[in-house]
Image 1: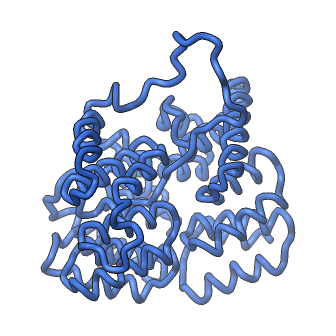
Image 2: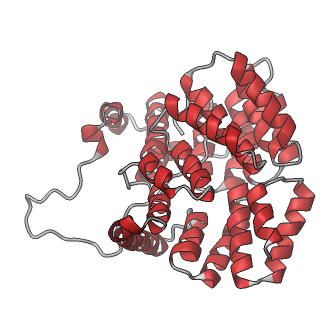
Length: 388
């Protein structure tokens, strides 16, 4: 999600891999394999001079931090994990330090979060908050990680600590995430929408807040308000990858693939976007040829990720296995592994769907236990469980 640096770590991570299954070696040096985004995207051209300065002064934290921030933004905007690697490389002098400077510690935690090393990210964030209890970004980033892990009470404490340190809309959005997942979806939605009516925050923050409001409404089974909030966010930013993926999921659940497909566009560098394109095409008879091509592309990308030892996208691969490849057992294995790392509603949903498809009573009980323990209200998950 395209957010200001204050809240960039709070965005859901859609970093993806794009390698093909079999390397292609051209037989002509004139063949162009890829046009790097830094050559064509004006916002990424800023990385080139920063990279040159960093090469000359690798121990300069100001330069390294500027480059790492831009690289993290690029990874999320483009869905390209190579930029995360570049961010980590820029932080090499401080990557293994026990007590690095604040800027390096925060960036290191952000990269770890993006790589789904949530335990490592929390260690860095705990150290940073102990050092600087008023550091708003550290609190917000930690609240995000804690929410992903299902530690909602702890996340709310960090969100509450943001009061008087950032805008009321940021505080309300931070609080709405864990509160809406732990039994207070109605209150979280009401507070968030009230703040949206009066707030004058910048576009990036409003997109973040509107998208979360839409997701809460969708979980509550309020399709009308979910549709309205998604549409409002889309007016503000049609390029936000997280927004497009979340909106597409809503439309696919509503059996509206003909609306989801044009929303997603044609940029298939992002695996999460490509997965939803394929799911929409699968439901449209006139898109059969494109579906076959995108199905093969996704299979190749997941296989390449396995060879690299990259297991960041188990949720997406589980959906691919279950709904496109009809491999329910493979989907369940991936969904269970994914659930051991992160526990967002989408993770619970694919776990429930795969367990239902395989009639795995033990995993279905895990889903029921989580719903009771957390207080989560999710109409889609509930419908899956009622059908078992």
